[in-house]
Image 1 (cartoon, rainbow, N blue to C red):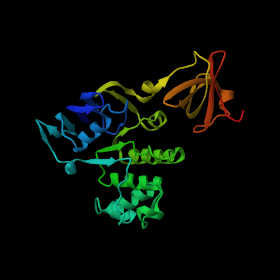
Image 2: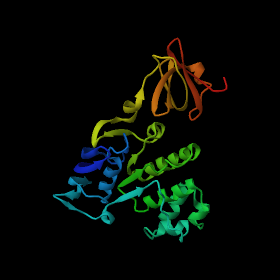
Image 3: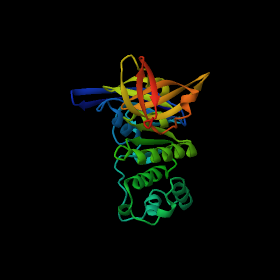
Image 4: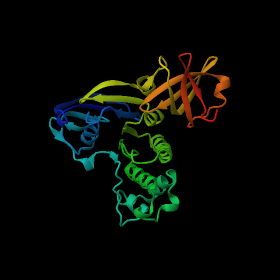
Length: 286
């Protein structure tokens, strides 16, 4: 169990802002942190990692990382931190980058295998693609088998196909090591696919906190529209099926028949429009 009760004054774009967080997280949860830019998301991660100071308490598995203005150093916290910038050592091979964290060859090879990087272990960072570098960064963040894995928009610079591949690797490692993961993201489809719980921050405060589906899902259709979106999930509900679709920065749910669902596949791009003011969903080719 992780208990966070912290306060910190920040200097935002509109002047001073108070970060005031009171939050409990269960072991093994995958938390998504989202909200407007400058709302305190990254600062919260950095305070957890011990990279910034704050007032209050942070308790992780009955051990205090912060209490009575006393804070344990970042290197003594069981944290894995993955940033958008991979910051790999250019003069070290992929395997050496992992072993630099902890000299555990068995664990390093296991992580590389899970991330699909075994054949690249002797290559250097400059020879890798952006997605491959981020997979290495993810493995490196997991080398300490951390209690908490922090992800600060690690996939935002990648294209859609590569993002999808990396998302599956992140989820696989999260489950394999039963790590508590906290991810900052602005992408609804990414949040929906990965997290079990979503927390929305605004102006330094938590304004929504709940199961990801409950926080993200929004029903639309009162006006005529036609948009492309990504089909995230098909859920059966009695004689109908509910399609969950990411459209821009929103997640919507559309009712489809079982016959219509036969033409749909999770992950494909679909067209969401209205027919007599009720949402419909079609494959682009139809």
